[in-house]
Image 1 (cartoon, one colour):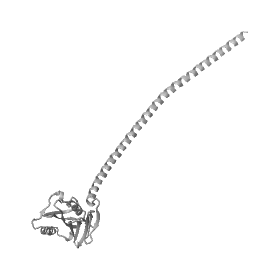
Image 2 (tube, one colour; image 1 turned 90 degrees about the vertical axis):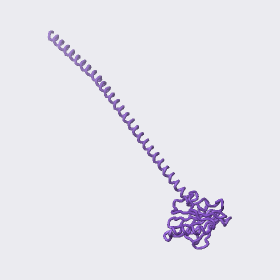
Image 3 (spheres, rainbow, N blue to C red; image 1 turned 180 degrees about the vertical axis):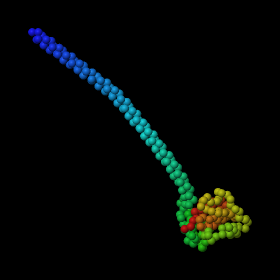
Image 4 (tube, rainbow, N blue to C red; image 1 turned 90 degrees about the horizontal axis):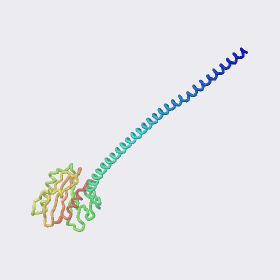
Length: 246
């Protein structure tokens, strides 16, 4: 009986110890998820920081791209303005040249006897009288005209040609000596013309103007017969400026 009591006591002690071990294990296991939860929280915080850094980085990239785009647009606009300015200036130069080389409504006409062509306005007609002499006259008033003569520059002494021109001009009037024409409004504006010289005498019918200039390889000499109001002088001058080699 005594042995049974000892056996019972031993068995009870074993069961008690087993129960204590089970509780300890469960307490340890219950603590484990708490530790994992803390780690997850820490990890979550760090992940949030990473996300914010990535967002900041993305915003910085977007701002850089936007600045680069603005700079590129600005460069394009500057280039466009410069191109527009260059085009505008080129157009102005071209327009100025066209105004000199081709008169409104004029027809390019070639001389039958000389090596030149000229822009002839509708109210005028060009005719060749003899080698070295063409007449451009007003159709309605044939006594208003311009005599045209051309020479090769390489075969011409310009100073001698000026002297001959003034002698011819003097012979057209017995009452006056040729006077140099210096009024810029009555001289050519075409920059292609070189060595321009002009003289004038006055006759009862109106002024007679002789002019000589070099244009490229050609020397041109003209004499303009106008009325006292100089009604046709500007048109004669513009057509004379348009003379060029064929």
